[in-house]
Image (cartoon, rainbow over all chains, first blue to last red; front, side, top):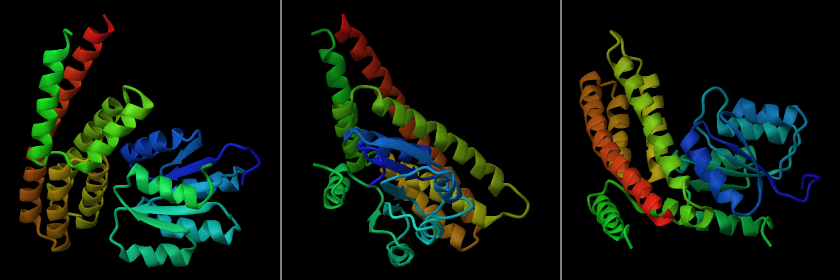
Length: 125
Length: 146
């Protein structure tokens, strides 16, 4: 986990509405939230020395998509848990998992589904 | 309580929106999130969605009226609208987006024109109902705070 006790989350999605919804879901747990609008911005977060425990990663984004961003982050040695959350059909599931994602969810995500995964990752007491 | 009639009106409005498939279960998810996180969340998300949808629909009308349509860009915009409408539970808008993407895949300009008209119609109907919803919520908050 990142050095702070607080779980640090990076939300990566080009849709501001979706990011707002995830932010509200995760703030309920007292997580610290940062947002990025595309894969390249997400990678830059780590290149500039930021650390995160968890990444919520969309796929279809301008420039670098979520699968590419996931592959790049794993290639950089980033160990944060990555949950791929996408409206793409389940065909992107294989690509995401091959790239190094830890879990895959189809949009729209509901709070219960997200909570189950966060518990499985031991982010919740 | 003075706000009781307005609350009843709001309940009827939301029930009809669910019954007519303007909204689906994802909107109930957002209502639960608002209960937990406090007032203002739903209004913010709905306002964000409506602004975003307006922007995308305008962009689509520009793209489709080009002499040579870039169906890739059209599809990307429709995909984005489908994503945000699914996230807020805007079921009818999301369904029309699926149809739109299908005609994009076929590079069907006439089909895109029809689909854009449908999206415009569905969004306008939903937008009016969202505006009524937000106005009722605001009036209820004012009355309840007195």
